[in-house]
Image (cartoon, rainbow, N blue to C red; front, side, top):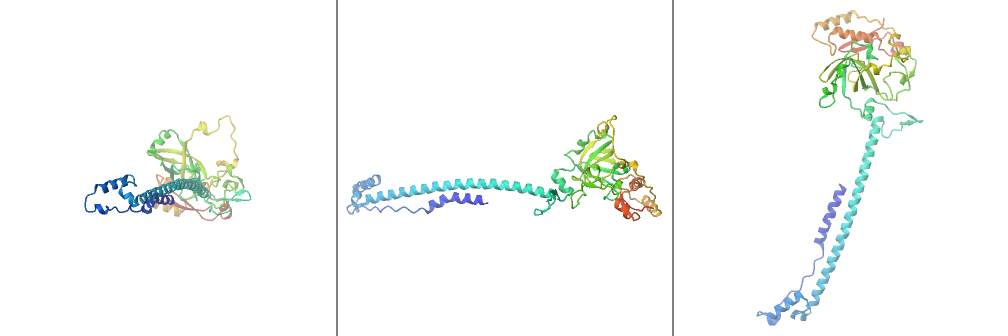
Length: 381
C-alpha cells in the first residue's frame, strides 16, 4: 500500500506544481496616443504591430515600454527553466522511489518464504515457536504426532479404510491373527478412481501402506520397545513391528476378496477404523518372499506358533444377547452375518490382545473389546 501511495503522490506533484507556479506579470495596457483617440490611426496600428514583432520599434517604443516587455520575456524564460529543472528532479525522485519499492517487495517475498518454511517446520515438530525443547544434550526431543508427520512428508491418503475395529483396544497386531475380519477401502484418487484399480483383481493379496494416525505421544519414540510377545523384554524398535516408530508408517498384508467400482473388499485386516491408506501394492510371491535356496532367519518369539492361543467361550448372557440380535433386524456393519462377526471376535480374543501390563498386573480384570457392532468384555478364567 505504501508503494501505491508514493506513486500516486509523485505523479500528481508535477500537476500541482504547474497550478501553483507564480503568475506571469500582465502586459501593460495598450492605449492609442492622444492624437489617434478620435480617429483611426494607421501609424498607431503599425507601431503596435512592430512592438509585438520586435518589442522596440514604432511609436510605443518611444514611450519606454519596450524595455519592460523584454523584462517580462526574460522572467518567463527563467520561470520556465526553473519549472523544467524541478520537474526533472521530481522524475528522478520517482525513479529512485520505484526502484526502492521493488527492492522492498523482493525483501518482503523472501521474508514470507522464510516464514512459511519456519511454520512448516514448527507444524512438523508440533513444538511451539519459542519452545526450547527441540535439542537437549545433543538429542532431539521434539513432539511426534502422526498428523504433523503426514503434513511434513507431504503424503496425501488415497482413502480411509473401514474396518471392524473402532479403536485400538482389540485391534489384532497382525492381519493373519483374525482372517475373518472384514474391511472396505474406498479409493479417493483422481477423477475416475476405478481406473486405478484396473488389473488389481488378478492378485489374491495386497500390501497396504498406511499411517498410524492415532499416534500422538508427547515424547519421541523410544529406541527400545517391549513387544507383547516377549512379556516385558526389550528389543530395538527396528527389530519389531511396534506402532510407535520414528515415522509412524505401517505395512499390512491383506486378502483381496473383491472390487466393486472403486471400493476394495478386504479380509484379514489389522487396522483401526478410519486409518489413512497411503498406497496399495500387489503381493507377488516371487518378489515378496526370499528365493527357495536362501535361508530365512527369524527369532522364535516372532512366530505365531510360539504362543498358545486362548480358548474362547461365550457366556450365557452373551449367547442370549446373540440370539436377540439374530431375531432383530439389526445387521453387522461389515460382516455378512452375526455368526461371522462372532467368529472374527473370537479370533481376536484367542490371540489375547491385552498389553503386557494388563496381563501381568491385572490379569483377572474385565477387558473391553469392540468388534464390528459387538461390544464384548472378556475375562480369563
